[in-house]
Image (tube, rainbow, N blue to C red; front, side):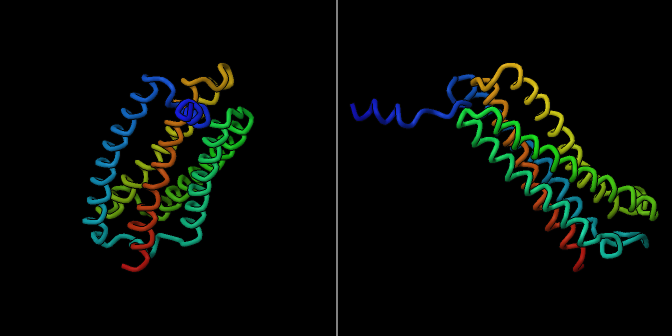
Length: 204
């Protein structure tokens, strides 16, 4: 009786209710491990090349604290709202999922807009991807992260459309959960970019 009650009081999360869901979530963790390798390579390349400016603009001359701090605030806040959306999903509250995921997407778009503005400003100042090895590594690293954020926004939007059509089923819950994992992963990568690229660039 005690065992039965425990199972009833603590049901599995909806995204883990099927064997297919559990396997696909595990597979996505493997995918994220491959993404870690990709970004680790880009970080290593940047750290080796960050001092090779070839007489072009340096990080100190380009980076503005206000801009990358706002970008960081937007993306980290979006991670919090994404977590709230997952919590609402597990409570079977469709409206809450859409509200918090919607806010997540708006914050993500704000981050992306600021990053594009930053890139355009650098290019207009003559700091292009071909100016120096430092800038090549910078644009590739930060641009790759930005491309992933763009993909994440489109992906989550498509999942929300499917959720609106089908409701919170084990399949849509699994997709929402995986989309959330991906978004949190991008936030973690940004913390490393914030530290290794922007903060380090201001002191070296």
